[in-house]
Length: 178
Image (cartoon, rainbow, N blue to C red):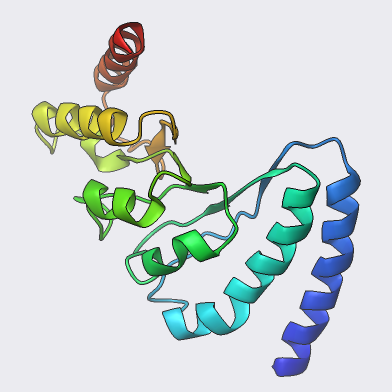
């Protein structure tokens, strides 16, 4: 297993150098991390050093780097600022994920963009519309200047397009006032 990871690391080093030379400005690692599948001690041993190696090369080339952390991520949040990431996509807050919006903000600070952030289940009629309004407003206010708002996870099959339009309108109003 160790030999496999070493081989993958060498392959990624080569690929990272090639990507650094490309005109692509934004790099998504597409990890889809979940700490109950990848425990934090294994993340620290195998993933974090790779993030740091790649991040160093890609940042020198002026790239914006982000990763997809989905599912339960509370165990990864303490590492967020050491990952050399400019953004983290799909951290899903409660009631769907295992963290609060405040925990996400504390982990990302003012340095890391949140990409997405709205719990997808809140677009379902199962949850009160006020809960979606609250989470939208909270994200807009806490992550001002470092938010690419979207739905964390997939739009639910029973999701309301009216709720989607409502969020769009809230964002437009917020942007007009800020």
